[in-house]
Length: 266
Image (cartoon, rainbow, N blue to C red):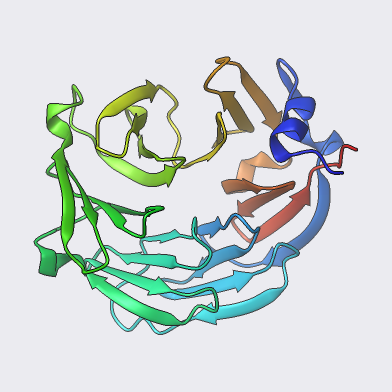
């Protein structure tokens, strides 16, 4: 039986670091120029091509779909944390497009119609709602009706105004990534639980592990033991973004998306 991703990382990432050349196995390269991509828990890959086309690949790097029905605006963010409801955020127009697993448009949420102006981040919620954050410091949750079901001002909770560039819900907690203040972890009611001083652009969370890219390392931080483990990535000079799903490492570069596997541990 294959060990879990976290166990494998724990073996590979020693107390300092190891070279990825000795631990990552190259699988495939997808030639593409992009600055945005994400993955879902199944391992599917979603790459933004240009400003308004979303390409979908399976975990092996095979093309399995695309969405190109955006007529106005450019893709600001893609949230694929729920592979059955992919969110595409068009910040310029305040629209959130909801796609199914076949990348068929199912619904459009117009944030402006709810009085949410200039939202900067959105995120899927496990209860079917959508989180939204605007520059005034308001954190909101929108249900399926749609209506705002929850609002809280984070200015009353954190010492400094936040300017999050990424937001994700995982295990009933909401993580906001601020480029200057690090990572803030909130509960489902918007109350600050803890802060992490890591200056990164995006995170993933697996059980008690925060996983993020800090050039030139892929870093796994155990939020319980406070142990930080590092994996040096190959050819890190042109890396744009990194994600991990199961035993696969996805590395977006300036001219391609490279897929690597972690060795199995029986």
